[in-house]
Image (cartoon, rainbow, N blue to C red; front, side):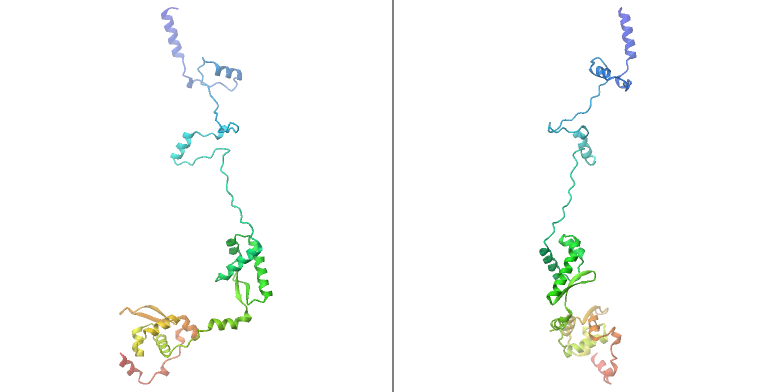
Length: 284
């Protein structure tokens, strides 16, 4: 073959050459022998595809191929804020909180009695069960048993249901003794000065301390403090002109006198002297 014929042949081959990525893939009907032969042939231009393989940390426990995750892909996802996907077969175990063990009956009874001694209002069985971390079905029957035991023992107190909950109460047959103890020392009579000051506040309210002192003719600061401490008088703002504190009677005052409003106070005119106007002008 001459040099000119060789150049023509090489030119034809170069024009007819197709890159491997543009060539059609072999059909599914290709026999295994042909595929393996193509993979083993060093002269073929077809790309050879290899199955992904992974290396297990422990040779005795191979890691599945689908659980393998390239490190660079995980790092790139974390950099973009994408949450890391857990590999298949390595899911995190969900921690299930274990219920608290059942308390012995004696300990549970003591805990219930201790709580019931400090509550200031009826407490429900559900709240008791939540606090003690015990099943609610144990609380109700045990409270009934405790209440029955108090009644059988003849204690001065009892456990009973009230307002949807449970609370300790004194027994009605001992009410007179309880009242005597509670009211002892609280039935102190008001002094004459306190009664006069209270009357001025009741009929002139709202009124300032200076106005009360002017009506009574003496300083009444100490008496006002006493009435405020007893809960019979309270502050109710300030006077617009002088800024002095204003005082009025409280609901406890109405309760003690058996009144609904201050309008039910008896009229004061029958108890006033005939020259009250002159006395009022003299005090101004």
